[in-house]
Amino acid sequence: HHIFFVHANISITPLPKGQVNFILLASSIQYFSNLKELITNLLSSLAAGGEIHIVDSPVYSSAEALNARERTRIYFKKKGFGKMNDWYHHHTWSELESFKFKILSKPPPRIIRWALKGGSTPFPWIKITA
View (cartoon, rainbow, N blue to C red):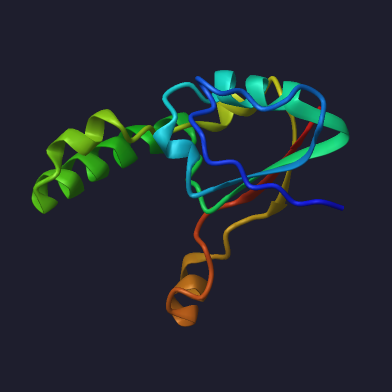
């Protein structure tokens, strides 16, 4: 198998259609404003049996997203990067409902994450297939 890494703006330079076996979105979906559009575009690039994996990215319930937006707003403002709020998006599980996805790993309970002291991600590992 050949591995190719692509560094590009996928909104401008789309991936080849039907030729990609594996797409990894690591710590990145929060920087795309339209998650459904992103996933739809990436699915068209997958070969038969291909998979999209989302890791180390937050996905919220609708209620959680409201609180997360406020926490993020405060965080970026405190750090002096208030404009980052325009580029950081809080995606919800409902945005994934129209896709065939499976949660491969759920975040461990808070007490376990604390005990690991950062050794585990608080975010789910999600696999999406065509």
